[in-house]
Length: 151
Image 1 (tube, rainbow, N blue to C red):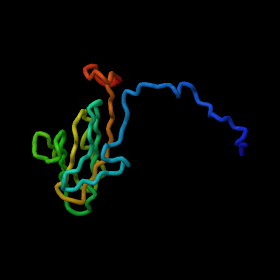
Image 2 (image 1 turned 60 degrees about the horizontal axis):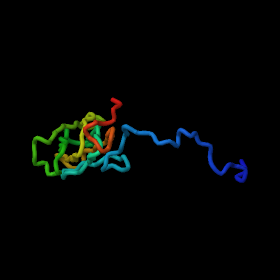
Image 3 (image 1 turned 180 degrees about the vertical axis):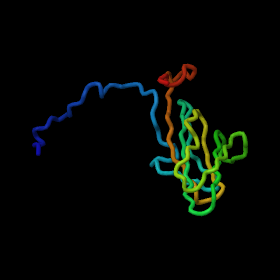
Image 4 (image 1 turned 30 degrees about the horizontal axis):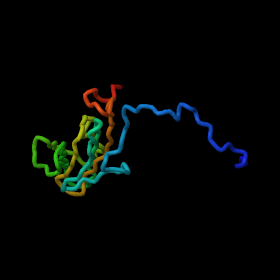
């Protein structure tokens, strides 16, 4: 075991590791799943993710139907609404069969400044998992320059 008195007071770190680097994009947790655990979907609307106004989020979502009885369940997503599910033009209705594992329900569609809500047709059977790829503006002060530039 090394003698603590003989160790340097500062660790040896590569100087490149300490320089600021521009990060054009990052994989982030869903805003309503800080622990990355599945989000339980009841029959009342639940917020899944809120997209920010200074970046574009590519949203990837999967659902599971863990029901042991019954048939498929219907999951509703409201994209860009307020959680009331009152505007049919903002709704997606997705049948989720039972016991088939994870089903991709949202394949990386880009959003900015919107909230995504979900609800189920029957309680106690659906979960949502997912993440977002957040693409940051090339220039935070000028949205017209676009985002990230790496794609």
